Image (cartoon, rainbow, N blue to C red):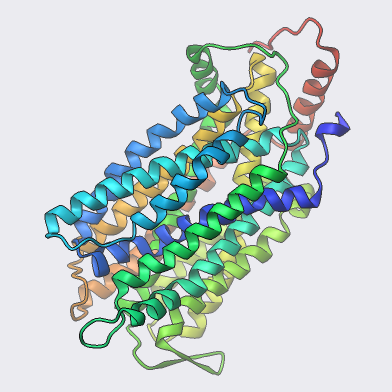
Length: 479
């Protein structure tokens, strides 16, 4: 391997991770609070919100490959992928705020506003995040270094999650009291807008840091244009990519449904208005949700820190399978907990996120491996297109997961801010505990058929290194 494209400094890895910290200031807010915001603050029904999630995110899902194709064909003094970050970061920040502004309109007009702002936000999110994800594959050609970059990326994403979980509701309450309602209660509409304004400024700064400090080093074997038809044909004959995309969809379904239902689980099942006993400490109801989320994210970080040594020891595929298996079992266990078993809930949260954290990080490194596999097989390097499929999987899982959450809540008779019924309680338990486990179990089964183990990846990297060194007589490998 070429040492110039092999090692990445810790500073550059940290700068790369800042991009996902920026994204997750929005992504985590959308995952954990957006459904709640639309139903309890913005003022539309759970079914209407679920339909909007499905429609908008599906549209956005099929937009991702377009961005990937365009990024692959970009040539500038900044490279292929970095200029997309530079030119998209300001619209990214502005639309993040507009999505959380509640206009004084009738319900039907509000729904139109929600569709317009949410659609625009999702499209600009893709426009910056597809090239950002692909950037990792051209920063280094070393598989373990990519795993390390994935770990930095995921740890930064989890840090973004901690910020969102720890401060969002507090910021909403703080700013909501500044512009309080007539009865003196916090104005959550204004509170959410102000909180997202702060996150938007941070996101812009962090993404600009990624642009300035990260470099593109890995070049394709054949530096020539390829047709879209050939790129798409290569993509859909890349079996490891197809399997990994299915796994990614299932994993994101797991995460989207579980994270999106946490606030409902606490508000409508546990329904604690006083204090709760947690390992002998009394936790107020207002802090219970944030503490639960933070505990999970901290444990995800701890699991991800072990990602590179675990991958080196047993391989990426095995790490992923073990992680998702444990996540499935622990998720189901929640269904059998009584609403007063707070300590057990937090214990399962810690174990579940410690297990699943490495799986989420591993996916990005494995996508980079499928890029190398495709290049060796075809002679063309469609990095942007392949990484857009990672976003495709994420968005499709996210869209279906959000829709499932909204529809299930409606099915179980959920009406925002009304007395809790036994049917509603059971519904949020099914949503939080059982639904995620279904998708993670499918992901584990699919991984049995994924063939790019560590031995195969090293073999591919060595062959690519030889071909790039010689630049002579390259003939694509046929089946």
